[in-house]
Image (cartoon, one colour):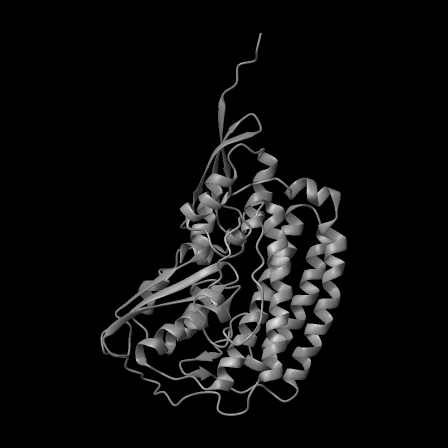
Length: 367
């Protein structure tokens, strides 16, 4: 006689550990098998889009640092400045464009290291977290010496950057690139060939290419499912059209593929930084723009490739010094809802591994 089973509704979260922020997952289980999962978001809603409409264009640079993806402050500043500059027709000096590109790629490595460390802890690899924080600390030192801030920088300005790089900064950045490339094989030895890590990630949480497109996934999540799309290539900004780099793409669409894509992206970021350091021109670092910049009437959509994917801002100007309307296209929002396709049919023990492989930041999701 077969045992009678009933579905169990399990609430995971909204505690912080393993849910990577104040996220609640409503998981429907049949024994240990996941039948359905529904993300419950909004616990970190800040109404940042509405707040931006009551602040000047310059003030909003500090707001996007904190109100959006707080692990990618430079990426937030970039997309906001890019949208404003395009609408106001502000030219950015060449040196500032190179500096921005360097900072954006350092930010990508820093964000991926946070993901790598926390993903390792999710799966029981504490050493990976300690090593990732060791490398990230050196990037934080570079940020602090150039911008004065370690997490929130307010370094980009409409028309350029706030200050030029301090003496010796480019040499220290080049030394970090050399140091970091020497550390990456250690991560491969620790995780890539680790049988426990492989058992927890290979073939787990598969997202097909068709489903990735249907769910609006982007960034490493989409590229791990075979979608060779990167905003830096498709819609180049700053100096990405002048540097050589590859788009890491995998076909498997599982947790391990998403891991491999991000590991290769960090190598490509170092490649971009080195080219920018070699070609960094002299000159001005900021155009002359009034603090009370009045943007003409019109609308514009700007997009960049943040560490989590396609980050966009739709901006409407009304001729005043404050935006009339701001709408943010957050990559983590769409990537999070791909969970509903990734988790069905897997075990409850796989839920955290799949969630961790997406690399969500809840302030980017909720806004």
